Length: 65
Image (tube, rainbow, N blue to C red; front, side, top):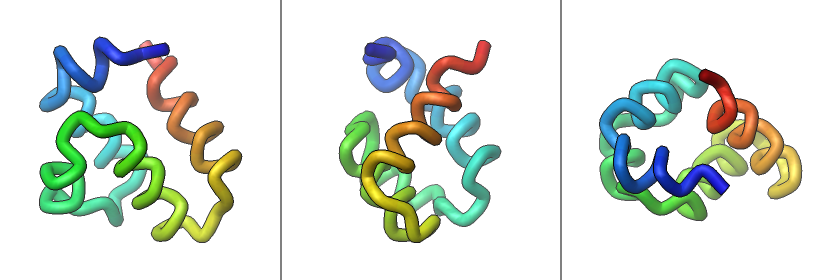
């Protein structure tokens, strides 16, 4: 899907994730590194949403220019 965001531009993309979800810490994202599944799990837990909703929200960030 948007693997290049995760693999090639992790630092920049991490900043986008932190702007969207301020409660995600540098430590959590660094531990997740470029692993989309780990980030999804953090979104699920912190936002209190199910997997489908977490996927939808993450896709919105991935598709923003």
